[in-house]
Length: 109
Image 1 (spheres, rainbow, N blue to C red):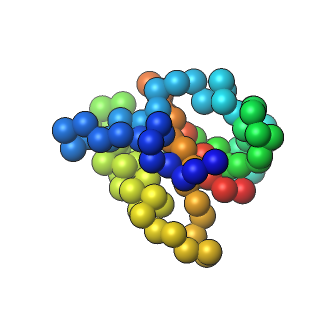
Image 2 (image 1 turned 60 degrees about the vertical axis):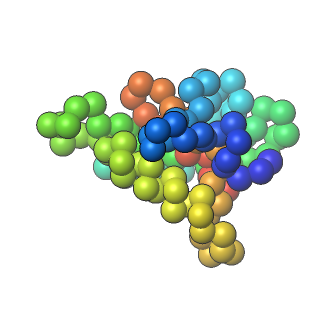
């Protein structure tokens, strides 16, 4: 599966639009691998290929005044850095999904 680009991400007037489809239509989400203050990483498996990945679910900040969650700008920065860096010691980003509450990064396991 190619790294993020085409369907996973497109640019619209300097604002990144992530795949709005339900991540669970494409991946079976499994056990938790780890968590932090604003994200949870779970094992996942692509429904068509059977390839295993890590799904990092990042909580989005609901309002500018809120302290909970991560700003859209910070999430986009992380996605762009992961997309641009191709190195054996840096995890590969495969796809990005978004819903109202979170952004889900599909990463190599």
